[in-house]
Image (cartoon, rainbow, N blue to C red):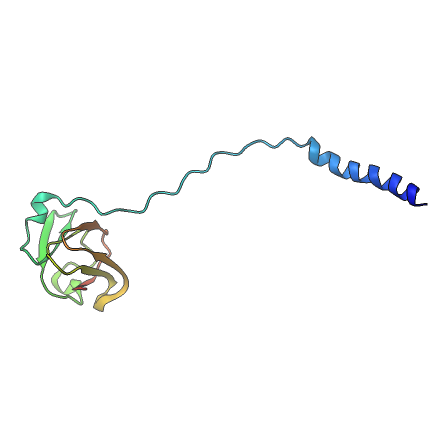
Length: 130
């Protein structure tokens, strides 16, 4: 009886495996590698020099307006810059500049090291030195 079971079981296993072996597997498209993380951009010389030493320089690309910030500012809308700046340059020698999505230093924060610049379009609403 055992031989009969084994004899009938083996062809059944072969039949189950047959459809799998008959299927051709074609390679799919090559996956696209993820985009690299955004990197800081080189400060345009004219804009970087448009604000005094020790300030956070900000620029609005749309209006081509630049201004410098030397203090912590909890609400950029108070001086017309809420969610308006696109480009940032830290013109301080020692402290990093922190920019925030929300008023009063809330939400996501970007840290800009001394002498470095960054692009963060139309989203910043407060800043301080950190």
